[in-house]
Image (cartoon, rainbow over all chains, first blue to last red; front, side):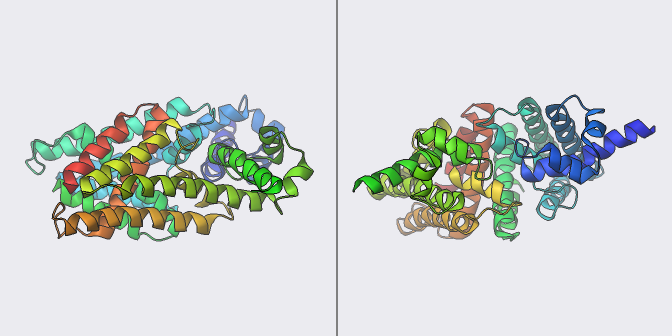
Length: 192
Length: 192
């Protein structure tokens, strides 16, 4: 990685935290300049526009998260362990361990539903990817006779993701992991 | 209601849509002036600050929603009918029928979790109120032997609300009610 690529990566890393915390529309160039310590020209040498940087930042957040999920799940030999690994990574969104500001998908979805942000298609792709990861865990569990074969994998995956995203928002609001814990207990008793 | 009160109510109604759509931090005084057709002085004659107006607007959205829920549920004689009534009102958040911009609680929660908005306590109260409404439906169902008496009402209410809020965000993002439909099917099969 040469110096230019390193600077570009540095800008993306710093900006992704801002975008995920303050929002894509609300984050100003001034705030990005402050967070990176770079001048306007230094930032826009690497990106065509704020939208271009926003897209790159969102992709970066999403990739970081997706890699964490896949890496955690990969090595597990039962669906129960895989789901446990999935929830462990999801739980980090509460304490800003891997990413700061909560779930980048949910944050962007709430922002995108009634304002025009250019990453809307990436948000949809991101959610579909996450639903597919959960679906794979369920299918794996069905094949291993851990999960009832009559469970509708798609429907159950949407139910699991929805409830975990909703509970994450509650737990972040109340600064109390109880909500997420309660939902995970319910999901486990449904699946296994 | 005198002219002053009518103007105040008019400002709140118009602003609540803006706040719920664009967000509490992002909504500018200029946009409120445009939406109400009033000058700055005309707005701040009725409110001490933007924060003051934001609080009043959030309370208005919340009260509108809460009244709709209670009114729909009140007349129903079984928990199943009550839950059906609850989901019917919740579904209107998808099509902006009662309020524009999605669930005011979820929108504000996502905004409040990592930025300092002054309505945070009202958001918490609002969610607790909504969890209590669902809890009442479950308790009612237990008393009527419609719902298994071993169901933990609090935990189940949090699970139901979380999953519906998460699914609403997905359905609004994809502009497809399928997600909310799938989650409601799952909840019904859990409860009844």
